[in-house]
Image (cartoon, rainbow, N blue to C red; front, top):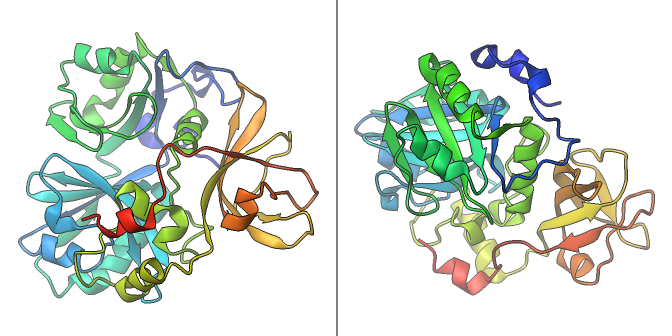
Length: 343
């Protein structure tokens, strides 16, 4: 169930009825603004932080330059993802943007190991709120506030207005972390030139970008390759040891993983469930749904699902009720050899 603006005290100034619902056909290219009420911000800071996180995360923390970000994951010893996130290098600290329900769980997990390092972790979700800004007019709206724009995808800028992260995707898209005392003012300013919409629109953009995140339902169910993390820069195979590294590297080198993330379309009014099984024409299980969002432009559900490659390649994908699904194109390439060279 999605959190509404009224459920998050930081966004109490927003009237939910003023947000275009995810059932309405809104042109995201024209420019949209949404309260990211379901995101948390986790901070790690201290002289040992880089070394500590390097031994826990799939991405190469040591190679993450200041004012940049990259996706990553934290795994258990079996290589299964406990959480996925966007890691931001902000001055002398690292920030993790991740789903709200996963922030506390990841902090508790990391603190068990952090006692051996000079590194402090804290949740900033009460002091920062996130706004999603996307579309052709997004950049102009942000610049009008006096915010310097990140030149490239995955880069960030910082100012008194907050931390701005440029996200990958087919259209300009930004995540803006705003100090709580400036949040209402920032919303009202951006609201003058952008269309305010429910967070469901943002989830649709995530799906169309081929970006899945670990949720409560999928925690410890998948390894990073299942979510295509190596192909979007979220796994380094050169950085050395981290928790779960041996299994993740072995799977990549042997190439034995038969399932991965695919983008699908379901022309059905009924909402599919996270973890709902998908089958082939013979009713044999081929995988599960990990993300969903309604696309009002074509009256269908868009999904991200971890399914068998042979089923996707042969377009042999169905719901348990025998409703066929279409396989849609991802905005990035999957190349195992290229991914092995990423650092």
